[in-house]
Amino acid sequence: MLSERLTAIISELEREVAEVQQANCPELVGELERLRVVAWAKVICPSTPQPSQQGASTPDRFLTVSEVEGRFSVTRKWLYRNKKRMPHSQPSRKKLLFPEQALTKWFTSRKMT
Image (cartoon, rainbow, N blue to C red; front, side, top):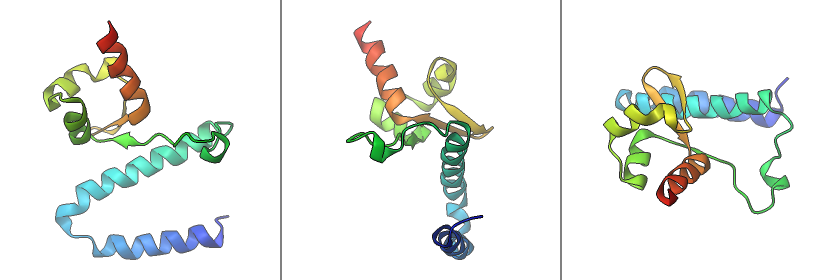
């Protein structure tokens, strides 16, 4: 059973989703999918230390294709062509997400070799 706080957050989210403009729905769905992946990760790996247990470390967030393009100066085409070699999650056929910390390490290791 969900806590009262989570129930209130979900109710508020439902109200806000009803107000979202259709043009923003794809981005909204992507963010909701990202949150779903994070929640499932907690279900699958419950022993993973929480941010408060990790000290100064922050939880990994997922980057979209556009964010990766800008941050690492690569093209969308290059990302899709090389995704199998990179840390990534593809929750749907049209959505590709990259864990920020793992991807940063991956790009860093490529520059050293």
